[in-house]
Length: 120
Image 1 (spheres, one colour):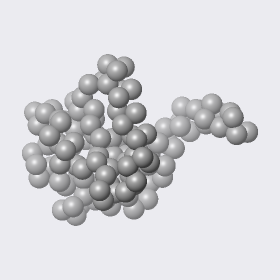
Image 2 (cartoon, rainbow, N blue to C red):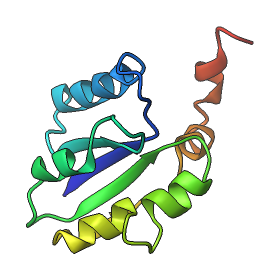
Image 3 (spheres, rainbow, N blue to C red):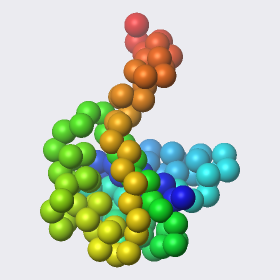
């Protein structure tokens, strides 16, 4: 299975650098079938991510969003032709949604204490 991480992104390339760090660390830790796309115009394009994933494997879409708002429910998982899910399906990929957000995983795994340790 391939994993496609989808983040919000920014038109500011420096702000998007953190996404590449995540991808590099995952690959270094033995997860080579990871790709990344950003929703923001001028950021990492979905077409580029699709070229990095084999079509004969299912793709799990993982939103790198804090909450399940419009970006997750419409732009990533929506039924419209321009959503990430729809574009992957139209390109021949078998899509597996992962509708939990980053914050849901943080709270579920009790990672919020470590996350905010420096702040609290």
